[in-house]
Length: 576
Image (cartoon, rainbow, N blue to C red):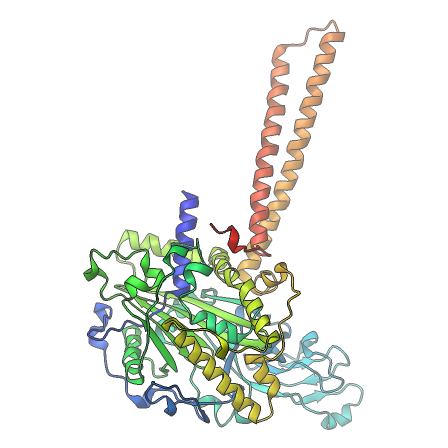
């Protein structure tokens, strides 16, 4: 039963990673019944728009009206608050820049500075927090306020005004994530006007489930490759074969249609079912899966062509919200989404933030079955079990995406060299065109290193071990309070089992020795030894042996659990 439950939960988790689609058809908008009275037309003035450069997409109407900012003039998700320590500085990396964040208790907010002391460039992340709101360098004790001003030079206190400041950055905290505006010059004039692409459904999910609803992991390939992968549903049956219902035999045509600007506006109305969102943002690009029930790999396992009327309103769409958000929404009687945010940490490396949102987790259950289901799902998705399942998904892509990115750099290939005859590739190509255009705007102002962090020019390096590429501890566990707690618990359990195993082995050995001694005494002594004594000793020996055997099995299972937080290899040839 436990094996079946594990597989079922794994299937649900996989579905929720990709289960995101706006409920739209040409003839009907299948909202949840309770929300029908809330529908209204989204006015074009309520939609977030950028500025600066233009990227055109032949065949799409009014795309020219959506302009592109340089990469650094955006809010980037840097880290979950859950992964940070309030009592010490925390190193970050965003767009190839080394940053440090620390919590100022006086102002009760997170601050972000460049991670280098202006004195001799030692990393401030190795320092400490003093006076509740200042950062002290560990090298010579120089201190900096939240705006980067140097406030103390112990070696020459009367010349503190001569010390150069450290660059500070604008910060937002939303969805339990620290967002950083990477262009200090436009922070006052532009940053506040740029909305985060957070829909009301996601906000409701976070407010209901809390910070543990977000999964964060560092990945061994760049944002340019990560975005392609997230926007492509056609790889699911192959890259994630045997996960849930997915099977290579499901790999077939995935008819995809890009949505026009007007259709994207209409689709955005789905958010009103979960409350008003004055900060609604339209996707820069969005596609729908035609006849989703029959073609979407997540739906195919449930589809029955003999009763098509049951599935006619099942829909799937995938949206890209520049610069860093991918959203899947599926509708099949109720709404579910997967919300992914990307951060280009450095060239050839990225960080992903994952939220699974579905009505069954946040709505009020109306039956005993619904209550039990909700309780079970919360126990799984808000625990390390859910994170282990998410690891299996990202591990399935990790090796070959790293190698793909590296080989493209070595051979000087770009996405324009891809062979992309299928409609399923259209959305990811549009994503790459946007990313290239944003990088071009960034290079225009002389920030090549920031552009490289997002699109890359150097090779990834092909000498990394599989244990490094699929490392779970440094990329997630060490930064996740849920998984660290579970890992420590598993290690304590292993230590207890090892002590018991030693005791059982000792009891077994002592019992065997005692039996030998009793047998010798019976032969050499005239004293009659009761047979029941032999029985007692034999039973004790058998019990010790059985205990040793069982404890060995428990130890292996516990070690497997521990390894799940550290590293598990993923070989596609073994997935049969």
